[in-house]
Length: 425
Image 1 (tube, rainbow, N blue to C red):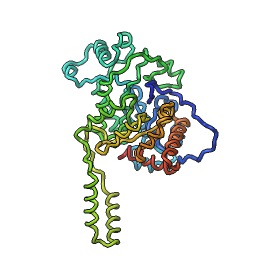
Image 2: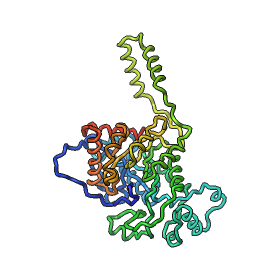
Image 3: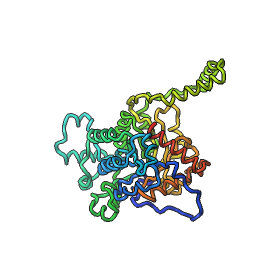
Image 4: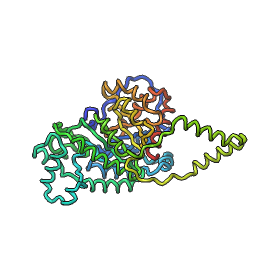
């Protein structure tokens, strides 16, 4: 659910380009992972998941109406561990879903921070007065009462975070997402007619734009940042990766993350010190015979495999983050590659956002070349499961492999490993 213009992504998949030229068969057998998609926006398409060629779909929640829908799909199709992912690959009915629970910036105005002093001292009793006060504070320009009346009653942070924590605990492989910041998006006018949207748009899940015209109102960035940070802290508490949305807010997004990892930066060992350490290691083993060296190396590798993962220590920031449909220039991407940053950052790309405009097409190759081989992912970002979702993942993967100079099998093996490391660490 990302758009460089801030407008809602269409719920119907755009038509794929096909020049009719013969193509090398796509290696679906390797295991292709869609790092970001929204099929619960069109629940009628969920039955198609079992027939898709993609090995795994990472399904995002975005608002109040779809949190339980994502959970219900995960209960039926969800993967809970890397072992289960690999073992179920040979099953007739493999598990194919990883859920993500989060509150998208397009809907961030619907949450209010009840941790503030004035809210702690006084429980909300006059719902209408509180609603007007809240939306007047977080929307710009200040909306009139008619527009506020068309909005849902705001939900307290504490309630949302409690419910999200419970969903994450119930789904051990789940991410936090889709969360982030968006300077471009504007709220749609008026209440959506749920009966109309369902009859005309294929059982479209309510709560989105649903064909409505856009108003001049947007969510103030300070409030978006508050909502984002609360969710990043939850991800850090539970050790879950996050899927991040960022439109026309690359600097603010980086600063929000950096404010949470401040004081936790990694120590970067200088090249001189690295050489000294390497020299010391070499001297330690210089008297060993080649046979002993081989045996020691074998023992070390076996110990590494057998060694259990250290218990996770909660932190104020997530361990890993994926910047989905990353639309920034190479300079912004490189910010996230600073070795001092304690969050490992991945970058996923989609046809609709990254190659859907002339501007995106123009910078695509340069951005892909700047992205480390071990940190690139692919996604559809589509709202309908099925053949088109598979197709858009295939198309973006082919383009990335072409830019990187990878064969398709090599490239998809790399991207599969990247996703497994992003999800499971």
